[in-house]
Image 1 (cartoon, rainbow, N blue to C red):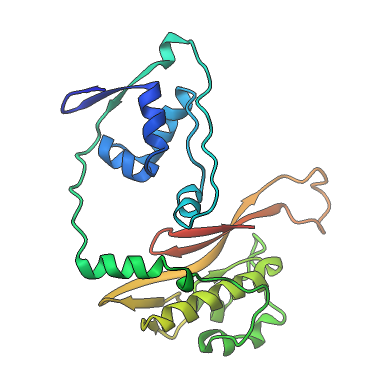
Image 2: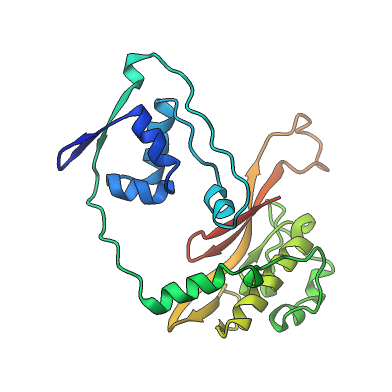
Length: 242
């Protein structure tokens, strides 16, 4: 691999090896570009890369499959010149305390499992169960009422029970670890958790995409379709495919 301060020339084989050795977000930082831009380069060179959840499954000891690099004799797809957009940020060394906590969380007994049904609702959920019996939905078919909005929950009625199970598990797990919740009363979403003195906004939402139904004139059919439940912390953190 040849590089200068602003340009990095990398071969197709080298880039393939790298994207399967570390997460795209981390590798993109080293190249000084976004992970979206790096993924575009991989697609241009016909390089397969790990999908969503690959590194998490691998970290948890699950069997993961590395896709082989397909043969490609096109001269235009043997190298890529990456133009650095920003300088990589130096990686701060983790303290011994943080390393110990990370190791503790990786232990088998610390594994967080989501039950199939809601058992012993957390106090933040328990007080809002009555409004879920006949929920109102918005134009996308998402439940977005006052109590759920305060808890940063935005899901469809068909996903509600699963969403409650996920949120209940998350609330209990955070509380078990000694973290405190901050919930400001009002219509605006305001659920946060305080971890090591830092207030983190988090919640769960379902991604929606609108599609045109073949029978557009049938008012009884909804023109939307759901896709994925996402648990987010500030931006996005982890997701669970349905």
